[in-house]
Image (cartoon, rainbow, N blue to C red; front, side, top):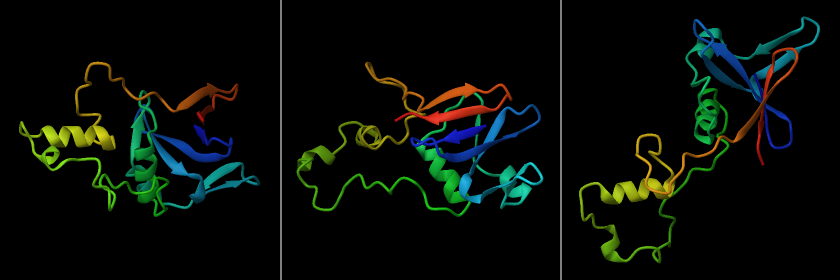
Amino acid sequence: DVFLDERDAVSYIGVEMGIFGTNSTLVPVEIVRVNDRRHLIEVAAEAETIKHAPHFGSEETVSPELEDRVRTYFGLEPLLPPSDPYPPGDTGRFDPDDRVDTEPGERMEAQNRLTGEGESDAPLLPGERIPEDRWDRETTSDNVTIHRRRI
């Protein structure tokens, strides 16, 4: 698999893992080199390192969080800046009573919805949707799947 960013530049290659190739590991292009002479792709990491890298299943989508876990795992800078749910000086969003739980865990659920954390574990509320896949997929005649990030 080849993953392209919004500019159609290669950002990752997908390496199929597992007995039946049901899981794939993203490998950032920064640690990949194409060897034209030998007609192969070389990765600047040991096979065991790639084997234990964050992976995703064939039915899963590549999320920004997965991309950041992969990049961090391989020693690269994450793409997303760290989010601060309470930026300094942001006192206007909440009244003092808004930080008090009326039911155990209520405030944490609301905060998770604001920050996007815990979405996979939390049931959807009425009107909420599962985030859409950010990638368009096409398979070439050479049986290579191209994943193109949507703008």
